[in-house]
Length: 152
Length: 322
Image 1 (tube, rainbow over the protein chains, first blue to last red):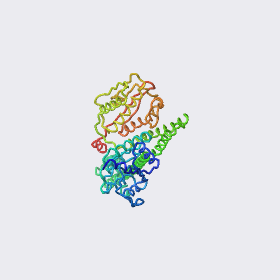
Image 2 (tube, rainbow over the protein chains, first blue to last red; image 1 turned 90 degrees about the horizontal axis):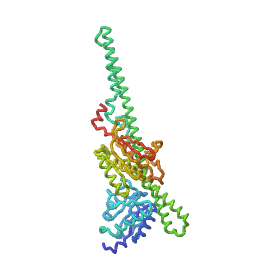
Image 3 (cartoon, rainbow over the protein chains, first blue to last red; image 1 turned 135 degrees about the horizontal axis):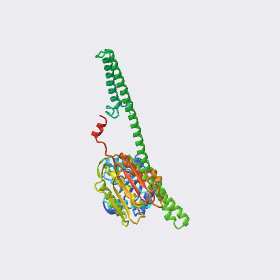
Image 4 (cartoon, rainbow over the protein chains, first blue to last red; image 1 turned 45 degrees about the horizontal axis):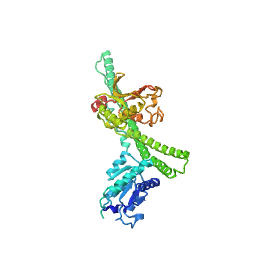
């Protein structure tokens, strides 16, 4: 993967709270992460997007996102179930998935890592801390980290 | 849930097998036989008549049946209580989960967009309006800390006790080392006794000592020469652990409020905090079956006493019920 391609890749943000989605997008922009952010409003929509099915049928699946930012508690399909399905599928088994959630409950942390999360980031309440968390996340996962090539 | 069959099974097998009810029954049986024997001796007939022996048997069987019914009743009662407790625990778990996920999300909206507004509208707002906005932001941040404290407290309640021998002297020294690193300009004399240990949960004991020592650290903030000690003392002919300081102390009239969550004896202006630290300590000590109490005087320092009884071993347990 060449560095130049990194910014052309999308970021898939799976978030059911519109306010949180807006704050995340705002914080990513403020941190200089210019990738296009696609927002899926729940776990099912995230799977539809990634596997080009349902309302995303016909989407080019070769166009995988650089990272998936995944909330845990969501209607229909929660983040952990989404993660397990992504890990079970050859097309997304190595896709970097970062859990971005409000919870600091041990059970959530354990389930996230057991299911194959690459990182777990808590969303702080105050804007300054939130922006700092998102900035570091973008800095590392988009600009620093070398992601594996997803199998075609 | 298919508990019908289980209902009549003892919830704790063997617990009531050596029950005092049965001992009483056995004693009565012996007394009854002794009485009948004495009657027979008095009437010059040393052998029990068949009728009398049958009567004694009948009494014994009746007593045994009654005791059996009592055991069944107690076991059923225990089972029902167990299930009620499980339900309460599950509810607490669900409540904490909701607080952790859902209650904070609106706070982030309030703080996030409030802060965004403050940045973009800064020049348009009057000093008074800026002040109002700041109050909204501060309140959201404060409520976030309160929910975090609430979760800390419930995490202790929900945690499983894993006991081992804990070197409390070492834990206390580590805590003090951390406090000194956070706040190097404070001049505090810590006196920590050697070889303090307890059969307790190491993670929870660390939380407890951290809260107690941090409190002592905080409330001695206005003393030019602060003194904090951690050791063992004799109280009511019992050896108890004790954390003492020469800080702000408290009025004993309010001592009962010390360990209640979110109760504070000092204003936030005087000393910061949400009032959850000592509540956490009390829950940890109670979880170990211990006691905690405090002694103090306003302006003259405080002392916190606690006990950590050793867990009854399996051998002691079975001895209790033999």
